[in-house]
Length: 280
Image 1 (spheres, helix red, strand yellow):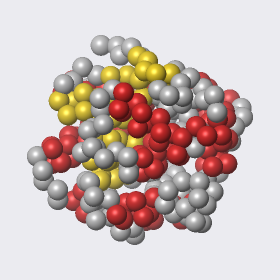
Image 2: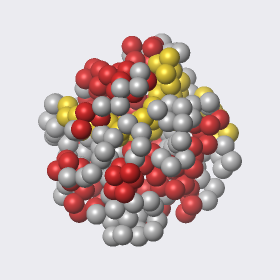
Image 3: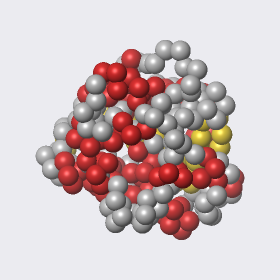
Image 4: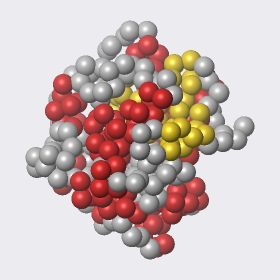
């Protein structure tokens, strides 16, 4: 079944989203930089989506959502967090399991103090970073294309180079959907995000995971090209599910797309645990 985009109006703009047919526990999916809710098609159009009410929004300036009227404010971690909180409330999804990929994970950490009814948070491709100073050099691997994610204007060659980092290094064919999405993205979304990553420009994510009260699952592709798992493993995370990072083999930065069966299985196990009150 083809999922059709829907629209919801929040205080700043119209937001596009996709919703599966499932009726059980809501899962709220937030995509990464220069991508869209379509990156979660392997969740929305799977047994996971048929069982659980799964919602994947397009962030402001991404996919089919409106571009930001005030890009300096909206295209920042606090601005994106505002949008996620508003959309979740508007769609009666505030009690969801919130799942964030890459930038989406950073947004969920930024919004976590307002997601008071969330049942749990899942992040992947998201190394928690400090805010003063930002610990980017420790959190990320030294990849030559990493900076493209914070560059406003990209050539077709640069778009391909950046999207290629989403997948394991031996990925033969880059999915066309991701190239379409980066071309759709408002360039200011990247440029202003980069400008906002300054001391005091966002909440300290290392403190957030260190003081989190709800269950947290972290997934990591073993062939990740951008994120340093060693950085994450050193952090204090008292509610980390099973007390460890969940590694997925044969996957890079986008395990939800590269290895959806493994990813979805982990997500179902996490949901089952947290919704029956097993806070291991």
